[in-house]
Length: 280
Image 1 (cartoon, one colour):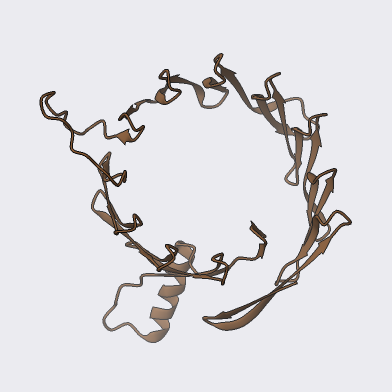
Image 2: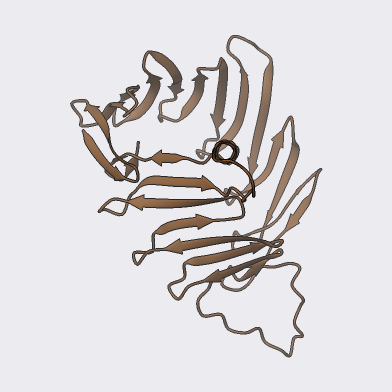
């Protein structure tokens, strides 16, 4: 089991784990008492997942252990097929027991194994183009067309940036960090950590500790603080919405407004459990 002692506010959260004879985790009891269990076979291929006694997912696999059918707890069934080279060829979604396919996607590839065409019965076709090095140059659909330009180091270039005359070589950028792209501006610290992102006048700020771990995120709507364990794994997130001052408002109204904004921006406390390097 795991004990997680948090100081803000002070409480203890406990995860309990169960393992099979192959040392594979087959169940976890969360701090809220719910039991998540997994049915696996062989070297750990997943067959089903349950929360308490409710089956959320079950799978069917081919001889190569690739997923071919997924049964979801909401009554949907997803099927997928594969090419002889192991690439995803088709995906379909339908109600369990129904022959009517709600969603169909087909994938086509070139001789180099790069995705060239995606057909979606709801969104239409998307076509992709690549350069001889395998870098994506463009994507086109009935709704829009995107093109991409890259420098010799494969860094993405801003298509809206003015072109320099040929006799003026581009300045050297030794840190290889993206500064501007499509109206967004980025600022970094001396260690290469992103400090600020400016997008259409909206500013987002990031704060890092001496181990290059994100400890604070702040934008126009909320502030989030993060906590880590001794192994550097994130164990908690505390977020709170910005509540603008209201002169004359009473404590009860301010508290209600804070709760409303927290719910609107999904703020609160999140706790993360770990099994080695795997999140629970």
